[in-house]
Length: 104
Image (cartoon, rainbow, N blue to C red; front, side, top):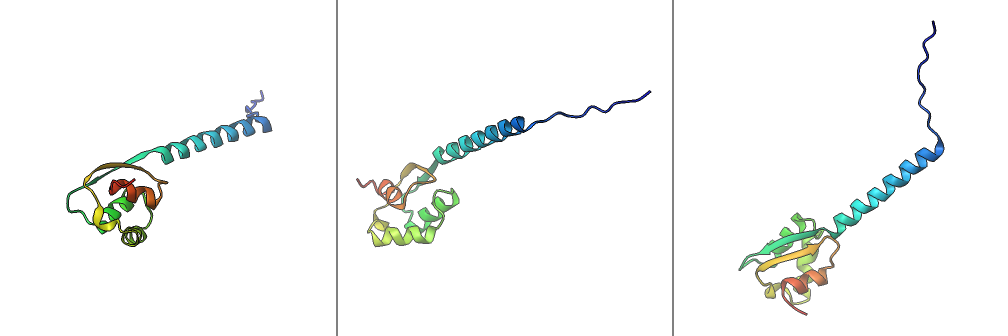
């Protein structure tokens, strides 16, 4: 009486399909993360450093110091307006600065 152990049958085309599906799902997730909007509330009296730190904490920018420098160099630092804003994680400093200062 011989017992046979089932052997899983797998071929290269199944693996390619799985890899392709995985890559497609990964791209969808990356795209949805990029498109995800992050909310930021700026209170009256918040200064550039606090706003920059909050932007960095939310993952909208990667370096609050560079953003503060950008705000000062471009005369935005004193024009920050309170309010609730939405940003994408790939927004540029210039877009963020214009938004939070309500500049065109």
